[in-house]
Structure formats: C-alpha cells, structure tokens
Amino acid sequence: MDGAQVSALALLSQVFGFDGFRPMQGDIVAAVTAGEDVLAILPTGGGKSLCFQLPALIRPGLTVVISPLIALMRDQVRALREAGVAAGALTSGNTEEETAEVFDALHRGALKLLYMAPERLASGGTGRMLAEARVTMIAVDEAHCVSQWGHDFRPDYLRINALRRALDVPLAAFTATADAETRDEIVERLFDGRAPRLFLGGFDRPNIHLAFAAKESPRKQILDFAAARPGQSGIVYCGTRAKTETLAKALSDTGGDALAYHGGMEPDARREVERRFQTDDGLVVVATVAFGMGIDKPDIRWVAHADLPKSIESYYQEIGRAGRDGAPAETLTLYGADDIRFRRMQIDEGLAPPERRMADHGRLNALLGLAEAQGCRRVRLLAYFGDAAEPCGACDLCDAPPETFDGTEAVMKALSAVLRTGESFGVGHLTDILVGSATEKVMQRGHDRLPTFGVGRDIDRRQWGAIFRQMMGHDLVRPDPERHGGLRMTQAARPILKGEQAILLRRDTMTTVARRPAVKA
Ligand code: ADP
Ligand code: ZN
Image (cartoon, rainbow, N blue to C red; front, side, top):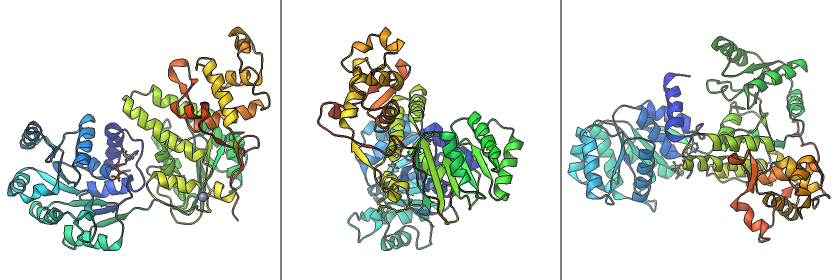
C-alpha cells in the first residue's frame, strides 16, 4: 500500500466518517489524485462526489467543481464546511456576503474546492479570476449535461473545454448516464476527443456467491465451510484479534492450513503472512479487517465472516476480495443478536456527532436488512448501491427460497414484554418473561405479575432468541447504551404494535441449524 493510499483512507475516515470505499471509489480516487483525466460513470447514489472531493483535499491548490444544480452545490458545500473543509460556491443563490467571502478566501489562496454553475463560465471575469487562482483540477458533475441529445443539455457546459485548455489542468467528469453515445459526446466535448481513463460502474460481481447464516454453533459453521473447500485460498474475517488466533488454531487442528493476522502482530510477522498468502496454494488467513488492503491475489476462492461486518460498505469490500480472477467464488457471513448489539453499541458509544451516528445506524440497518432478507440478496445489495438487478441464481436465497411465516403476533408479544418492563432489559430476561420462567430476577422485579408473563409458552427459548434477532435485524428494537444495552422499541415497530402492519419472519433461521450454501463441484 503506498503513501497516497494511506492518506486517502485516513482522510476518508477523518473528514467523511466512512470506514471504507464504495465499489469503484478507491480506484477512481487514486486516478484523480494522480492527475489523470477521468470519466467515471456510477449509478445515482454510488458516491460520485467523494471521488473528486477526496482528491481535491489531497492535491495541492484549488479544485473547481462545475455542477448544474444549485441546491446540490449548496448541500455539498455546507457538508464540506461542517467537516472542516475550505469550500465555497458561486451561485445565483448566494447572498452578497457569501460571494464576498468566497472571493476573499480565493484571493488568500485558502479555498480547496470552489463550486460554480456552468453559467458563470459565460462571463469573462470568471476566466480571469480562475487563471489567477491556483487551480489544479476541474471536476464536472452531471457531465451528461454537455450532450445535446440528452434532455438535460446545458449549453454552458460547452464552455468547460475551453476552461480546461486555458488552465491546462486535469479534468474529472462524472455522470450516472451510461449509454455509449453520451459517453462519446462527453469525451469529444470535455476532453477534445482525447480519451480519458474510463471507469464504468456496475457493481455486480456475478461470480461471487452470496450467503448469510444465523449463528448456531459459529465455530463449527466456519470449520465446516472451510473443510468443504480443501486446498482453496480463503479469508475468514473476525471481529476481534483474539478470535483470529483461536479460530486459526482450530482450523489448523482440524487439518487445515491456516494463519492468524491482525494489527497487533509485529510488522514482520504480518508481512510474512501476506507473503505466504500470495504464494502458497490453499492457505486460509483468519484476520481482522486489517488484512486485505494491500492484498492483490486474484484467486481467493472464498471469504467468510465469522462475525457481522460493520456496514454494508465494509461487507461489499471484504467479500469483493474473492474471485478477482472472475472464476466462481463463495462467501458466508455469520450474524447473531450479539453482533447486532455489538455494532449498535459501537456506534452509540463512539464519539461521532449525532448525524453521523444516525448515518452509521442506517448503513448497519442496510446490512442487517441484507442478512434477514427474504428475497435475492444480490438484488438487495445492488439496489443499495443504486444498481438494478434481476434475481441472480447465485445466492443462498435464490438457491433455496426461505420459508416465512406471519410473525406479527409473536412480535407483538415480544414488544409488549419490552414496553411493560420499561425498555431496559435484554433478550434473556425478556424471554424468561415470555415463556413464563420464574427466575430470581423475574421474581425480584415482580415481572411474574405482568400480563405478558407466560404468553409466549408455545414458542421455545431458542426460537424467541431468533425472533428477537430478527426484530433487531428489522430495527424494531435497539439496545440502549444508556441502559446497559437493554432493548428499546423504535418508531418502526409502532405500526406493528398498533396492528396496522404485519411482519413476516423467516422460519428457516429459527429452529434448524442454518443451511450451508451448496458446495459446488
Ligand atoms: P451520487 O452523486 O453518485 O449520486 P453521492 O456522492 O451523493 O452519490 O453519495 C451518495 C451517498 O452515499 C451519500 O449519502 C454519501 O454520503 C454516501 N457515501 C458515499 N461514499 C461513501 C462511502 N465510501 N461509505 C459510505 N457512504 C458513502
Ligand atoms: Zn440471488
């Protein structure tokens, strides 16, 4: 991993609060930072703005961003400023003070990003002003607006090319419009026909089989998964350093070739594991997320998560290390109620400001939604990144559609137990109440006298555990850090409690040991 990559990742987390790149972002950021001309086509919601904002911070001087939408520019500038980045916009929506402030910062050489609408380019003053500023890059958002045949044509986009020539700086163009004609027009009209480096989004990695399983006997689940794939290179991601060691040992003890890897190891020892993974056949590395960034091994045949990743972005990035050669690769992600609790608490106990924490919960929710999905996982995963897809035939849920049942009544009972106990208890105690178990704690608190006591006798403890896990997965209840992780009800649960909305639960992850994905010959 080179220095530029390290600083890009550090800024990604410090300034933007993200723990990893979205698909394609890392490569695009590297190319733009290196000063290449770039045309990147990513679906809406794919995270295009980061692809010029982050390089703008790493590169010296000023980046000019041309964007057609005033509201969007203002949003981005506000978000950047809140993150401590010197950004400004020149738009018709500015107050005089705002404009004066931007010019002042510009003269002082203090700006990193200057947003402007294309109409600004029509005035000669703008060209002179930019020629005097230390512009080192131009970024063009919604680059398809340069196409005369699209319905978003903005004549002033045709002035961008002249600006690029005059300033003689690299240009990075972004759009979600992927058809070849528009692409050709962009190349012709923004780059004088000299082909830029092209990034064509489309996040699907169809050769990677997707599978999740609820934790039943997690160690055995991982050992079985690895044992079914002898002689193949694989990675097992774990949530803690200690677990990488114990699991690597368990794998070796059962005849596998496995090594642990985590950030607490000596650099030499880590490099040795990396080297052996690259060169040996069939080695399994059991690692924390510290493993992978510098790894460029095309024939990793499988990736397993012994614990739930942090977010849907991390999940995609980690499974994406498998099957770079295009040959079939498999994944298995284990998750359980404890993982969900752990990840929630990690977010709530972190030092991030409230909005960022909310966004983190949202990204975790997206991953949990994928874990508890009832239809094709790929459709759901790609939808999150803005790509449409058909049911894929290469995920566990396509292989064997899950059986569901109407869980409304059970969920209502569980919610009632949560509410009647003041939203301060965990799954174990709530289950005791539901199945009518008169434990000491139940008696002490008088919870045996609640109307909810024993109303869930028809369901066994283990199944209640699975129901609570699914409820957490659907974000109906969340652990409350203020109350030692006791579950509290969320807004999303209200319509169910009121009987306005039904909820389907998956039966397959309730009672049986979770299925392993089919082993392909
Ligand atoms: P686009 O312009 O491609 O439609 P945006 O740049 O507006 O997409 O990004 C879409 C959303 O994705 C934003 O909410 C942004 O904060 C989020 N996002 C972008 N990159 C990442 C990342 N690496 N990790 C997590 N979220 C991201
Ligand atoms: Zn599928």
